Length: 250
Image 1 (tube, one colour):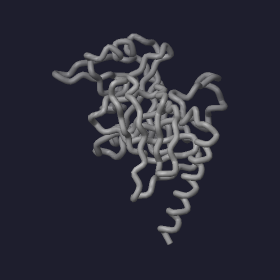
Image 2: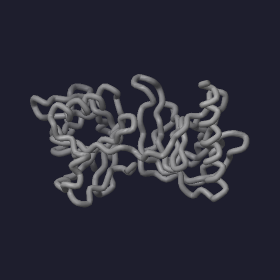
Image 3: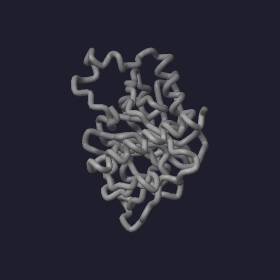
Image 4: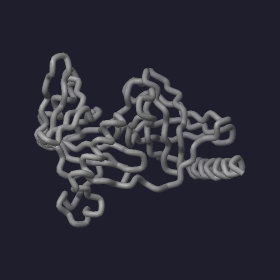
């Protein structure tokens, strides 16, 4: 379920989606407020593949409008506004929220610009994949080394926030150009400790803030192209980290 966006093959009226559907106006408003208050990054996308990263700026349920931050000089924004369909996806902890954007309109307020859309009548709420994740111990500094997908000359060393057998989260400082969801990065070196070092490919699944108001972003990635030895080494690292954390808590 950790895709962007979640495919709704049976259509949005499919009864099979009812367990994920949020339609109560008060609950819809509460979830949107959480996205706005935490300044959660949202990935906007169209069926044609156009994408844009933004945040929810303002809510006006009385007028039936939401406003998203917008940079009018970004060419990707024009392609998004011209599309008849767009979907917004964002993450609140372990919950993935998805909603349609209708009647997109770029508006200007003095020096500021905003992307307005109709207030969504429903959201879809999906639980993220449940594979066990561990956070590195405080006395370790696991990192990944990779080239920025948009700037191959830029070599990055990103700190590992947490890891599971199928995914990894990385800390991206504010001075690093953003990496949008959907991008695959090949030839990544993952170094978790002196005994756990392997090569992998990463597919960026989502980008969120680490904490409200805190610098940097959390890059959630899916691990791919692991050899059998690498997968076993990763599993050992996860098991050993979990055991050490238990011992430290005794």
